[in-house]
Image (cartoon, rainbow over all chains, first blue to last red; front, side, top):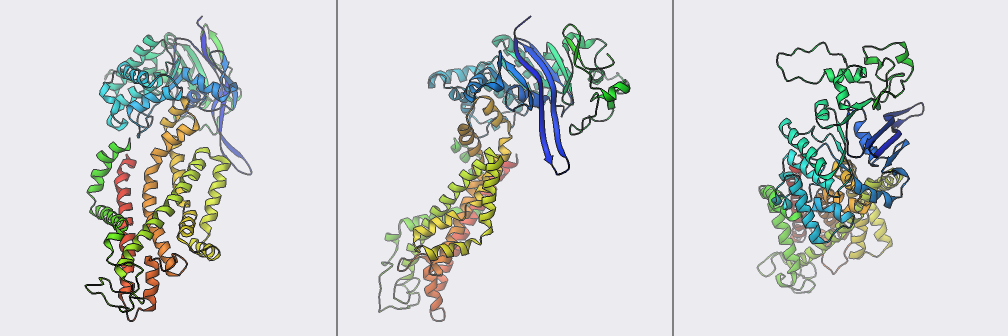
Length: 319
Length: 282
């Protein structure tokens, strides 16, 4: 068993919305999530929009404080560290964002953007930093002329490469990729995904890959975690997802993956409607209002997240 | 850093706007005039010629003379210096206060933000001009006092603007990225947030210069601003008021000077706003 790099223990994040005299509105974005990442693996995190995937990603990087629960990185509880210890730890964990148009400072040149990580951590001399920046550009497949340009002079795919270069500047162990390709054209998506794969091999990275797109997730992941309304409903190795006996929500998601065959006629979709608002999460299993197999117990008791086979966890009364 | 942006994006758009360009030219001319006042003015602005009292405009006195026989044209040229000085110092002070308080409020949020914004509300409740009058009545009416007081009473707009910019920029992913890289607050504020928030501040500062010049003229007109014999457009107007039936030139020329100056700053400010906007929409 490989070493565990990152571990979330019963992490919950609640955002207050509005407090009135009579009641308090809040959003439970992430509820009771326990998850671990082994060094060197790629874990895919999939779920509908608004299910708390990105919030979980931000919690794992200490960009947001959790309401309760702990997050351990390389054997240390990251929320018990002092500010300077945490700043130091950030060298080892980085993030790539969804929107390549808002993730680069429009007033800085590419050189300034890529040099900043080293300046922040006081690494290298001026000439060393210039060399490092040049090799970063090379690693992500951009020409050296890019150095003196501004972000708006690049296409979406190129900007995403720049975002990846910035995340890799400090040679991190863990990279969280938050919907890194969903803003890109499909043809560019494949290139960027391949870049992620190449870099993983070259630098020995561990990825948490967040996406709402199962085909993207299954292309890159070793294990896949499925999230619904702030809770994990299933975690299993990728191969497991071809078989039956999965959580009903996972099965519905798999059924909904587009098939590249114009003659293919889809069976009646299993899932109707939208997920309930995270402000009012249904009692019992949060999935029961949309679940085709729901029974009485599902409406009352929150199912436990439990192992059903080696390395396969799910939370469902019916499985 | 900003040079390339100015040259490639800002200037081409700005240049197409004729009104803005004329505003820029007029502002530049005013600068030159106040810089070169000793060489441009045909007379000493305080030279009293009792043989030439209240002379109408002529070839020897382009804008006539006042009740003490001083050359109005020379006094207006020297008055430009006062206006410019007041405009820039007052607006500089207001912008500095506004940027600092707005940045702190927007970045830290919470009770700090609440406190600062209530202070802004409080300051906006005062009828500013009467506040200035009251303060000047207690203090000495000198040009420095006027500049400082105008500055201290006109920072609220800038503070609100910077705060709003910070609030929206703070959520952008490049700020999160900087935080994930381990950047400290100071770096995030000065390297990432401020450069992206300054464009609207430039516009409001340019428009603010016009406002400050108007306030100074009004104060001087009321005798609470720049004190005679130092020439200012406002106190030339006061003299004009006393002689308006017999010497129209004493009111018309300083009035025109104020009008043209304020207009050119407003045109310049609007021009900058329009040249920046399309980029903000993108």
